[in-house]
Length: 618
Image (cartoon, rainbow, N blue to C red):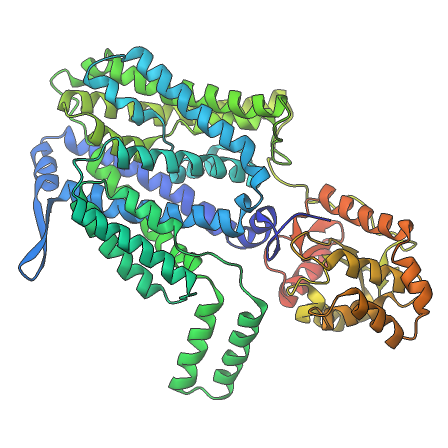
C-alpha cells in the first residue's frame, strides 16, 4: 500500500498537482520577491552612502505612535518594521510549518529525518566557524547571525539558478529551512530578548490557549484568529520577548486540514443555488460555503503570502541593509573577523554542514534523500542555504550593540548572500555536467506501458487516446467519485481508452481490501461493475459489504471469497503500486495522458484539454 496523503496523497503529489497549478505563479512570486529584495537592499546601500544619507537615518529614526485611548504603542519606524511587519513574515512561516506537519511533506515523519539532521548540522557548523574567528567579547554574541536561512530568498534564487524542474529539491530545502526557522526564532525569542515582564507574558500565554481553543472547536472564520494574534503580538511586545516568536507560534497554532468531500459538495450545491437564484442572502451563504471548504490556515497564507513577499521583506531590507560604507567602514569590515566570521559561517559552514549532515545520514542508513534528488543537488542547495539575509539581519540588530560591529556584520550578511548565490549556481552547473544530475523532480513518464492483457480498460483497446488513472476506492476525489471520468469519456467516446490502476493508501483502512475485491470481481469478468459500485458505496467497504455486493452482481460468492486471498491478485495490486512509485505518483487521483503524468488540476475540463493537446502533438 502507498503511504501518501493529499487530496488522497502526500506533499509530492501536492507539489506536482496543487503547486503545479500555481507553481509558475508561485515561482514568479518567489523569484520576483527575491529580485525586489535585492533591489531594496541595493537601494538602501546607495541611499545610505549618498549625499542624502542623513534622510535615510532620519526616516527610520522617526517615531510613530499608535494610540488606543490614553495608551498606545510608540516606536521608531525601524522598530515598527523589525518588531511589527516582521511578525507577519514569521506568522506566515508558522502557517507554512503547521501545514507541512498537518497535511504536507512532514506528515510522514520518516521524511523529516535526513532534513532534520542536515538542518541541525547545518546550524552547528556555521556557529562553530563563526566562534572560531570570534571566540570572545561582544562579537561572540553574533553566533546566531549564521544559523538561519532566508526561506523566501533561498527559494527565489533556487528558481533562478537551480535546475529547470526542482520540485523534489524544493521540498527537501523547505523541510530543512523549517527546522532552521524554528531554531532561529527560538534563539531570537530566548537568547536575544530583553528582560521579561510577567503580566504581559501571562496575557500572551492566554492568547496562545485561545488560539488552540479556536482550533479545537473547529472555528473556520479567520477574523477570531486574527484578533487573538494581534492581542498576542501586543502582549509579547510588552513582555520583553521579541515579537517574532509570537508570530511563529501563532502560525503553528492555526489549523490546516484537507478539504472534506462533504464541505466541497455543500459549497458546490450552494453555488448552484446562487446561480439559480442570484439573491444577496443566497450569495452570502454560497460565499461562506466556498470559504469554509478551505482551511483557515491556507486562506491566511493565500492572503498574506504576496504581502510578505512584495512588501514586508523588501521594506525590511530597505530598513536594515543601509550601511554607510564611508569613513573607512568598508575597509574595516573587510578586515574584521566579524565580517569574515559571518561570510565563512554562512557560505562555507552551511554548505559543509548541510552536505555532511544529509549525505552522512544517508550513508549511515538513517534515511534516504527524496526521489530525484542527488548528492550534487544537496551540496548546491546547502550553498544556497547560506543566504541568511532577513533572519541574519534581524539578529545583527539584536545580538550586537556596537554600531561598528553591526555595520561589519551587515556587510558580511550581504557578501554571504551574493557569494552563496554564485557558489550555488556553480555547484548546480557542476552537478549537471559532471554527475548528470539535472532536474530534481519526480519522474513524469509512465513506467509500465498500458498492457491490454493485464490492465483494466474501458473503451476500445486500440483507441487513439489513453487516460490512465491511479485510484483508491476510498478516495473521494478520484474521477469516478467526482464524475470527471464519465464526463471525459462522454466527450471523446470511442476515441478514448480509460485505464484504471490501483494505489491503495495507508490512510484509507479499507482501500487494499476494496482493490482486492475489484480484482476478484475482474476474475469473473465483472471488474467495472464492482468498480462503479465501490465508488458509490465508499463509506461501506467492510468485508461483509463487499461480499454482499458480489452477491448483488450475481458473482460466484464462494469463488469471490477465495480470490480475495489469491496471491496472484495481490501481486497484480503490488505491481500497480510499484509502477506508480516508479512513475512519480504519490497520491490519488493521479492521471497520465498517454505516458505523461498530468500536472495541475484534474477536473474534467482540464483532462479534456490535456487529451486534446496530446492528440494535436501526435
